[in-house]
Structures are given as structure tokens and as C-alpha cells.
Amino acid sequence: MDPLIFVFLLLFGCVIGSFLNVCIYRIPRGKSIVTPPSACPECDEKIRPWQNIPVVSFLLLKGRCNNCKTKISVRYPLVELLTGFLTVIVYYWFGMNFEGLAALFLLYYLVAVVFIDIDFRIIPDRIILAGLITGVIIHVAGNFMSWKEILVGGLIGSGFLLFTFFLGKLLFKKESVGGGDIKFGFMLGIFLGTQNIIVGLFSSYVFAALIGGGSKILQGRAPTGEIPFGPYLALGSATALFFGDDIAAGYFAWVGF
Ligand SMILES: [Zn+2]
Image (tube, rainbow, N blue to C red; front, side, top):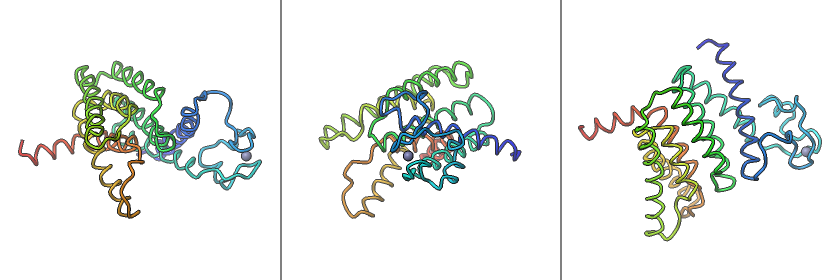
């Protein structure tokens, strides 16, 4: 990859990541993501343009508010860097085309959903709606997946999670997935299509078992079911986005199809 393109994409992605930080903070609080300009949540001091440069400002300010010196979470620059590198990886993997654009939008939504779900245990309707609209627009413009594929993908995504929802209630008398997950599943299926939403759901459960089981062993107690399912769905979907074809092919080879 041309180093100039690499730097440009990384910076572009970091700027998007900075916007995602705003979304992660404001959307679950029911605030506008456009106005007012960012301010320190502690002292309300407006964040000046030079303090709003992704990653760089965090380092210049040594991770503290310029005014009240309250610590700024290291998660802000990490989300920016994550989004930056995801942007580079998508370009490398898919190239500059509609498939890449769909992948990029999906990953940006996933980043927002992961951190909002961890913080608030919700997946906001605003994000799901934005995802559905952009997903459909990119599919119409790019025409790289059939309508049947898109719609069936959405139905599998939400249908399977709905099934899990009822199964969890029936067997364990608790909600393993929430209503937000079911709507989110539809959005994921629209982006991923039939094959990859199946791979994505499967991978989500594998991640949930591995990470949930791992944290159980580390903490020496039963998982409380407190880890929301959204981050696992996001992780599974990202896996399907990049490796869906390989995983599906591997599976069919394994069962001797
Ligand atoms: Zn402050």
C-alpha cells in the first residue's frame, strides 16, 4: 500500500473515530450529535480545535482536561486509533468499491454499538435506523448482493436472536438477549447477507462462550449474565465480514459437502 494512502486513511479513520466518541457519549444520553460543540463533562469548558485533534490532543494534554485537569479516559484515543486502523484494513481487504464502503459503514456502527452497549446495556434505535438506511442505500447503489440475499439475511439475523430470546426465557427464566439485539440482528443481516449472517451469529456465540467462560475462570465465579450480547454480535459480525467465505468453505469441507 502507498504510504501516503495509508496515512490518509488512518487519519480519516481517526477523525471518524473522534465523531464516534461523540456518538457513544451523546446518543444514549438522548443528546444531539451535531450541537453543541464538545465540552469537558466535568467543568463544561469548551474543547478548542487544537484540543480536538484525534489521539494527538490526548497526548499533548497528557490525558487531562486543559481547564480542570480531570482525567480523560484513555478509551477516547483508543476508539480513534481502532477506527483508523479498521479503515486502513477495509481498504486493504476490499479496495475502493461499494463492498468496501458497506464494510466501512458496518464497522463504524459496530464500534459505536460495542461501547454504548458496554456503558448503557442498550443498542439505540437511532443507530439501527441509520444502519438500515445506509445499508439499503449502499446496496441499491452498489448492487453487489441480491435483494433476496439482503432480506433473508436480515430475517435470519433478527429471527435467530428472537428465537434465542424465547429459548432463554423458557429455559433459564432470564433474558440472554434483549430487544435491541433482535433489531440489531436485522441490521447486521442486511449488511452481511445470508451466508455471512449465519457465520456471524455462530461466531458471536463462540466469542461469548470463550470470553464469558474465560472471565468466569479468571474471576472464579459464575458469569452473571451482565456482559451485554451486543459486543459479541459485533465481534462475530466483524469476523464474518472478513472471514465469512473462508469459514463457510471450511465448514462445508469439514462436513464433506
Ligand atoms: Zn474540565
